[in-house]
Image (cartoon, rainbow, N blue to C red; front, side, top):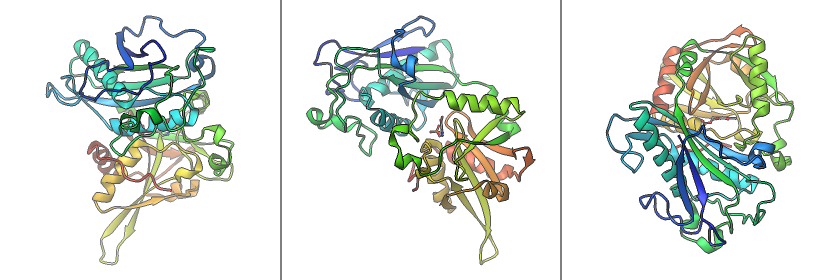
Length: 366
Ligand code: PLP
């Protein structure tokens, strides 16, 4: 199922009146149109297609067997970490200066898509992909982005709901849609088998994000061709996945996932503590919503949290290494560059439990 977010016609079509999350499905500013994704709908001049010039998010929705709660429209789904995904979509869109419909419109589009999806797929969990592109080349009104339009408050709502004049982009000139599809069953199998991972050079150093913001490091842009090419390269070498390294030798992230590692640390009282570590966010990686929510739960469970810089040797010496993402969840790494590394099924289970707690993510770290 696809739901298009279509800006209402005319210059008053700014996102200044998003309506409330509980309001009508198509509040002022943006109308929702539910459609069949097999029907062609995107112009061939859309810069999301011709240049990968856009942003996206992928979140999951858990079918909750008729509980009737979650989406706000009665669909039996709980969308996981929706606030975090909407906040990151807004951050990415701001980095690319793409005006974005307000958060409530995205929420309503996701709920409408899930409603329609549930009718044909009862009880099936869904992947919900949110996409915003720069829109067709030469569209009237393009390029009037107002910086700050994508500010998100602590509750995940766009700040423009309270200060429309100041923050709203003058025109929503992009192309916006939400695609709802079934969760692939193959992912669970891969999760259980574990992952053979290749370390691949991303070709940039760990300081590039700060030095060269135009490279859009750490934003979830549609330009994922390089990430997909890295995965194909890994497959050609008999591996399942990739961990990118920086040219100065730091561990970065997977093409579609965040790297986590754990160390068991002997305590003075004879017990064993656990330290959970993820690479430095400032090294130009995407702040993972799964990492954030897992860290919040791990902290509540008394684990120590750590942030890189990490080197490949740290992964080799760890008590466990995982790739985590919203769709794949927590998948253990079994091999690095062909060498088997330590695995800890107990920790894998604990981490998946932490992710399932769906806590508000804490800090992503430095
Ligand atoms: N890093 C990259 C490059 C990604 O594309 C993704 C998700 O697709 C992640 C990390 C994991 O992010 P999340 O946990 O929010 O799904």
